[in-house]
Image 1 (cartoon, rainbow, N blue to C red):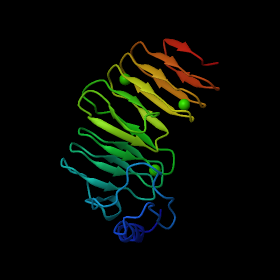
Image 2 (cartoon, rainbow, N blue to C red):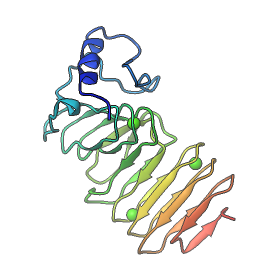
Image 3 (cartoon, rainbow, N blue to C red):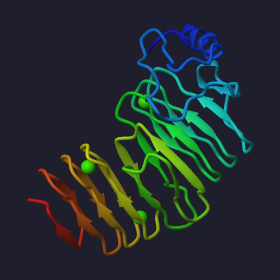
Length: 203
Ligand SMILES: [Ca+2]
Ligand SMILES: [Ca+2]
Ligand SMILES: [Ca+2]
């Protein structure tokens, strides 16, 4: 666990509004992705602050954060560590940062359609808004009938309940499905899947 002086370094760097976000012990935010620059941090998890139902600009810590942003068009930076992030309602811009990060739609009230291969805004369906996802390796769906797609990297995709359609795309993917009739395609490379009723491209 890094000391809490780290966020103080981040805040001073943000004021510069440079193209990279560098902190001691943490790599820059993902190139080309959403950044926390210019908008002003409203929720600094390193300072013990909590997201609200309004528009938040959320800065994670260098450790493993679990972030739920509630409603509002949030800007969320997971930063270092293996983060699990739920944008909630609203049009969110979410950057997992470094580490194996998971974007989750676990509390979505409706089914979602999400692809990690789309770098720009994507209409995720239901009440979860038009989200922009950057820097995520792992994807977790809703309890409903989701369509979940990975990218060219090795992804961990959790379909959860519902009749889900999952496509891992390239990379060595891990797919898990739960109750419902799930259709899973591992895509190229050696993938692993569990709980899929219809399974293709998985050895
Ligand atoms: Ca991270
Ligand atoms: Ca599901
Ligand atoms: Ca993949």
